[in-house]
Image (cartoon, rainbow, N blue to C red):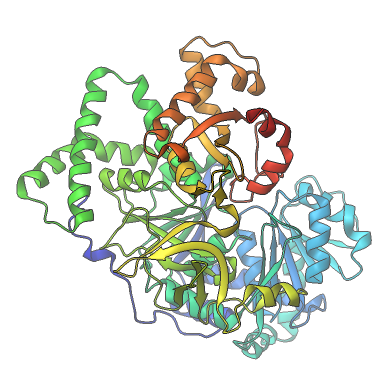
Length: 618
C-alpha cells in the first residue's frame, strides 16, 4: 500500500555512483561495473528482448569500430534519424566513444528539415531507422556534399537495395569487427582521447520562431548534469523506467538515456508511440517521466471510464479519491496524517485506488516526473490523491534539461520547485525573467554567434525567456513566457498559461491557445481530444461523419462551452474567455502547428488561423 505520509525513501542520492567526466568514460565504466545485468529491454514481435551491459558494450564497440573503418574522425558529426529504439542509443554511444558529435533528428521531420539539420551540423554519417527515413535522406543527399555514408538500422524491405552510399547496421558492425581484429584497442584509444571540454551532442530547438538552432553541450557538462540529476530525483539499478519520448529531445536524452546510463536503472522501450498506454500497463515502471499531454490523457481515460461505470463503482471511486484528497491535503500542508485517516486511506487504496493505478500503469511507481510544459496544479493533486507523488521539473534545451525540481518531501502544486543544487537561478529585476547560471548551461548555438550572444546577459546568465517569481522558501513559479503575456486593449496584463492549463484539465480538451493581445476581450483556439469527444458524441447520439464535422456539431460546441464556463468561474472577469473556435483538423506530430513535444505553437497558430480569430472579434 502507498504511504504518502512517509516519502523519506525518495530522498536524493548525493554520492557518486559511477566515475567518469565524459559520457564514454561513464558508459564504459558502467559496462565493467554492471556486466551481466540488464540495462535495456525492447519489445519485438510480442517478445521483450533484453540487452545486458555486456551485450550493449559489444554492440557499441563494433559500431564504433565500423565508424573508424569509414574514416569517421574525432569531432566529426553523425546524425540519427529514428524513432526511440535501442539502436538509437547504440549509435549515439558509438559516436561519442569515437570522439564524435552526436545529433538527433525528429523522425517526423520532412526531407527539407533533414537537409537543413544535416547541412548545419556538418553531418558526415547519417543513421536512419528504416526505409521510410532512408527515403528522406536519399531525397536530399545530392545537396549534402559532406555526407559520406547512410547507415540503416532495419533493412526490412531494402534487401534488394544496392547503393554505394547506404550500409546496414549489421554491415557496419561487421566492418567494426574487422577493425578490432587488427587493432583490439582502437575504440579504447578514441575513448581515452575524449576530453570534458570536447563538444558531445547537438540538440536542435524546435524552431517555433525561425530556423532550429543547434544547442551545443560538452562532455563535461553532460557528465556533471547527469550526476546532478541524482541529487534532484534519485534512481538506482532497482528502478524500471520507460523510454518513449523522442531521444533527440533533451528530456529523454538526459532524463532517459544518460540518467539511466549513470544510475543503472533499466530502460524499457515501447513498441511505438501508439502503444504507450498498453506498454505502461505491461511494464508498471517504478519511475515514469512524461510530458503533461501524457498525464492529461491518463486522467481523461479514468474520467471517461467512470462515466460508463455503475453507480456503485462511481460512488466507491468518489469516496476513495475524496479520502486520497484529504490525505494529499495534509501531506501538502506538512501536517501529520491521523491514524483514522490512515486507516481510511488503506481501505480506499485496497478497494479502489490501487486498481486505478494499475489501470493507468503506475501501480509500482515511487514517483512521477513531469516537465517540458506547464501542468495543471489540480492534476498534480489528483495523482497525489491516487497515492503517487508527481514532481514537476523545469528546464530547457539550453540548461541541459532540468534546472529546478520539486523535492519529494515538500511538494507545492503550481511551483517548479527550487533551483537544482548544480546551478543557480535568479529573477532579473525589472523584467522578472528567470535566468540560470552553472556548468550545465550550454556553450552556445552552432554557427550562430549573434544568437548566442543575445541569449546571455553581460554577466553571463542565461536568458530563459520565462517570467516568474520566487517565494520565501526558494520555490520558483513560472508566470509565463515573456513573449506570450497578453496585454488587453484595456491595459490588463494576462498570463495565458494559467487559464490554458486549467482548460486542459478537461478530458475533452487536448490543448488551447488564448488570444487577446491589444483586443477588448479574451478568446481561445481549442483542440479537442478526439477519442473522448467522439465517445461523448456516440453516447449522446450526435451525428458526425469525420473529425471536422465533429468539431462543428452544436452539441460538441456546447460541450466545450461548458468546459470554458467551468474554468471561467475561477478567474476575474477581465481574464475570462468570451469566444472560442475549435480546430477542425486533427493534428499529429507531423503537422507544423505542433512542437515535437505535442504543444501548439502559439505564434504559428495565431498566424495560420488569423481569419478565424478576426471572426471572433467581428
